Amino acid sequence: PTSSVDLLAYVPPGDAEGCASYPGAVGSSGDFLAVVGSQNCSLAQKVERARAAGAKGIMVVSDTKRVNLDVGDTSFGAEMVIGVPKSLGEVIVARSLAGGAEHLVRMSISIYSPPGLLDVSLLLLVCLATSLIVAGAFFATADLRLGSPIAPKSEEVVEMGKFFPLAFCVVGSVVLVVLYFLMQYLIYVIIFMFCLGGTTQLTELLHRCLRYRFTALQHKLFTVPLLGPIEVAHLIAFPCAVSVALSWVFFRNGDQGWIFQDIIGASFLCFIQRTLRLPNIKLAVALLTLMFFFDIFWVFISPVFFEKSVMVVVATGGGTGESVPMLLRIPAINDPLGRDRMLGFGDIALPGLLISFLRRHDLLSR
Image 1 (tube, helix red, strand yellow):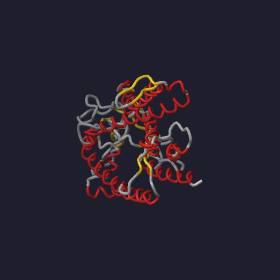
Image 2 (image 1 turned 45 degrees about the vertical axis):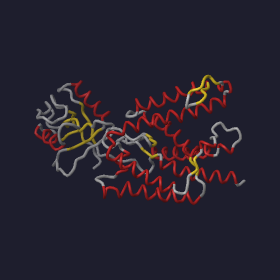
Image 3 (image 1 turned 180 degrees about the vertical axis):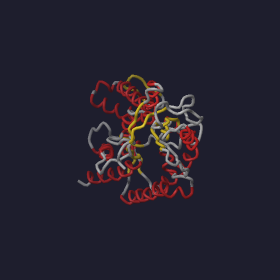
Image 4 (image 1 turned 90 degrees about the vertical axis):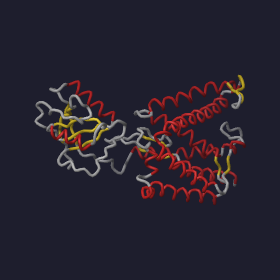
C-alpha cells in the first residue's frame, strides 16, 4: 500500500521509555502512537504497554542519529512499530509535551519509498571520490613538475616492497579483529588519531601553498625540536587546520559533520597517493586482487566465524553510538530516512595508487 495514515503522537506520562504501565491518550479514540525511548526494557515490553493503553503501536526514538530497531523474531500482531532517529524523535517529543494532553501532535505516516535509479547523493559521492583520485594523482606526480609546492621530498616517499600486499592484508585483518572485540575502548582513540592526522595533513598542505603563493610567509621565526623550523606560514595554517578538526569533533553527529569529515578525508587521500608509490604493475595487480578478496571475506564470509560481519560492525562503531570516521560522507537528498551515502577511504586510496602509477608512467614515457 502507498496510502498514509494519520495518528497522534503521545508521550507516556511518567516514563518516557514506555516500560511502565500508562493510561491512554485522552480523546484520541485509540488513534495514537506511543512515542517512547529505546532504553530500559525490551521492545516486546514496550509494545505490550502500548497495547494495554489502547495505542495503535509505538514510535521508538533512537539514542543516536541512526535508527537501530532490532525487532528480532518477536511477533507484535497488529501493532505498528516505527523507529526514528534521535533528532526527529526529540522534535516530536518536544512538540507533544508543549501542546499538552489535549493538543497532541498529528503525524502522517506512510510506507518508505526509496530513491529511484537517479540517487543524487550517490552520484555526488562517486564524483567526489573520482575527483579525489584525480587530485591524488596530481599530488603523486608533483615531483615531476618543476617548482611544485606540493612535491614530496625523497625521504617522504615510501615505495612498496614485494611483500607489502600480503603484509597489508595480514595487518589489516588483525586490526579489524581487535577493533571488533574492543571497539568500545578504542573508538575514541580512533577519533583522536583522525583529528591529529587531519590537523597534520591540512597544516602541511596549507603551509606549502601559502609559502609558495606569498613568499613573505617563508620567514623563519624559531625552531621546534623534532618539528624543525617554524615559518609564518605555519602559524597561519595550523589554526585553520585545528579549527576544521575541532569543528568535526563538535558536529560529527550532526547534520554539518560530513563537511569537515570530507575535508579531512580529502587531505588524507591526497597525501596517501603522494607518499605511497607502486614500483610496477605486477605489485599493483597483486595488491588490488588481494584487497578484493580481503573485502569479500570480512564483509560477507566473516559472519560464518563471528556473530556478525566484522567489517560492518567496525565501520558502524560497534554499538558505541560513534562511527569510524575513515570514510567519505554525503548527506541523503530526497531520501525520507536521511541515510548518508558513504564510501571508505580504502575504496578510493587503492584504485588511486594504481591511477597514480599509470599517470607517472605516462609522464616519464613522453
